[in-house]
Every structure is written in C-alpha cells, then in structure tokens.
Image (cartoon, rainbow, N blue to C red; front, side, top):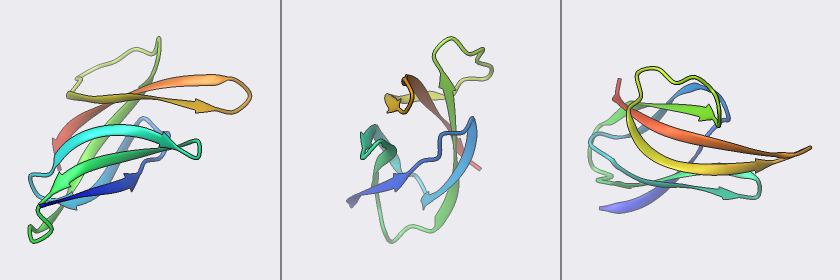
Amino acid sequence: MEIVKVQLEVITTQAISLPAKAKLLTIQTIDNKPWLFALVNPESDTVDRIIKTYETGEKITGVGKYIGTYHEIGGGTFTYHSFDDGEA
C-alpha cells in the first residue's frame, strides 16, 4: 500500500485514474491547487473514479461520499466541497 496524490481540476464532474478500491483520504490545497490524497494498492488495475465538486451554496444532486473541503484564492476566496461518486 502507498499514499498517492492527484491534482484535481476545479470542475463539477471529473474522472481520475486510480488503482481499484483506492481509499480516498482528503483533499488539500497546495500552491493554490486542489490535490486528492488516496491510499492505494499500486499493484491493482487502474480504474476511473468519479469526483464531483460543488461550490458553497450550489444545488447538489445525487451526492456521493464526502471527501473534503478546500479553498481556492484568486480575486476572492472560493470554497469547494468534493464527493466520491465511486468507480466508473
């Protein structure tokens, strides 16, 4: 097992490649960019994982498991909340 980090885009829905059955740990902002940290078995086959991100106050539908909240600074501070919608 090992911990990996994957840079996220600030978009509503995205697919990221991770080893199957990865455990999503947290999201942290590094150099004003969101990074997802996950505990993985690097020997597992890679699958797409669906991540959904919403801004505070935005309508949310079909929410998955909460991963974390992060802030983006640029002309103001924006707060985003990300959820795991599982393997694709």
